[in-house]
Length: 380
Ligand SMILES: Nc1nc2c(ncn2[C@@H]2O[C@H](COP(=O)(O)OP(=O)(O)O)[C@@H](O)[C@H]2O)c(=O)[nH]1
Ligand SMILES: [Mg+2]
Image (cartoon, rainbow, N blue to C red; front, top):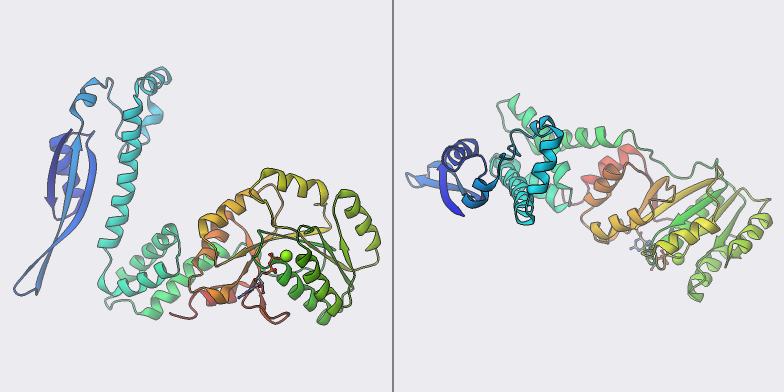
C-alpha cells in the first residue's frame, strides 16, 4: 500500500489533494488537527493533516472500478444489475473488509471534524452533554442546531441559550412519545425487566398510589417463584396495602388467579427477571400472560446499568408489546442521557422514573416538561 501525508487548511482541501494524487480509491488511515502558534501564541493557525493510502495492486485488478463510496453513493443504484453482481462476486474478503474499514474511518473522521470545529464557547457545554452520556447522534443534532443559532447572532451563545436550544431539539424528538403513568383504564399491569432493577419496589410504589390516591381495589400476582425472598417481599407490601397476592407457577395458576381477582379494579403482575437472555424466558411469559386489550405492560430499566446491556434487554423483550419504559435508580447516577437515547432510538415513551428506595415516595410520573427539566438538573 502506498501511503502519504497531506496537510491543508480544511479537510475538504486535504481530501482534494488525496484524490488528485492517490485517486478515488484512497483510504483515509488517520486524520488530525495541527495547531501552530505564532507571536507567543496570539495567532493560531489550524491545519488538517490526513494520512491516506492506496492499495495499488488491488486497485489495478478491480475492473470495472467500484463507484466512489462517499461522494457518489447513489450511483451504486445506477450500476446495471448484471454488472453489480459481477462487482460483488469479484470482491475479495480482504477488499470487503477494507471497504468496511474505510467507512469506519470516514465516520471517525467526521466525528473528529465535529470536535475540532467546535468554537471555544461550546466546549464546556459539550463536556456536559458527553458526561450525560447522550448518544453521538443526539449530540450531533444539538450541535447542528447550536451552529444555526450561532450564525444568527454576533455574541457567542450563552449557556442558557445553549440549554434552551438543546431543550428544543429534545422536545421535538420526545413530544410524540407517550408520557405518563397508569391510565387506570386497563385492569392488568405487567411489569417486566431483569432481576434487581427494582420491579417489585416500583410495583409497590405504583400500587400504593393507586390505593391511597385513587382508592382502587387492587391485587398482586407474582410469577417470580424462584426466590422465596421475592415472594415475601411482595407479600409484605401487599399486607401493608391489605391487598391479596396470588403466586403463579404455570398458565393454569395464572388463569385461576385472574378468576379470583374478577372483583378487583387493578391487578399488578410482578415477573421474574431470571434468564431473560434466553429466548425461552420470553416465550414462557407469552404463554402464561395475556396480552389483550385489558393489559398495560412496562419494561423496567435501571439507569445504573450499561446502555449496551439495556439495549440487549430491550431487544429480548421486543416480542412483548411494551407500552412504556420505567427508569429506576436515577438517584444513583449522574448520567441520565441513556434514558433519552433509548426512548428516542426505540420510539418508546416513559411512564415513571424512580429516585430512591422509599415506598411509596420515591417515584415520579413522567411528563414531557419534567423529563426535559430533568436533563439539566444536578451538574448543569
Ligand atoms: N437507589 C435506588 N434503589 C432502588 C430503586 N428502586 C429499587 N431500588 C432497590 O433495588 C433493589 C432491588 O429492587 P427489587 O424491587 O427487589 O428489584 P426486582 O428484582 O427487579 O424486583 C432493592 O434494594 C430496592 O430497594 C431506586 O429508584 N433507587
Ligand atoms: Mg422482584
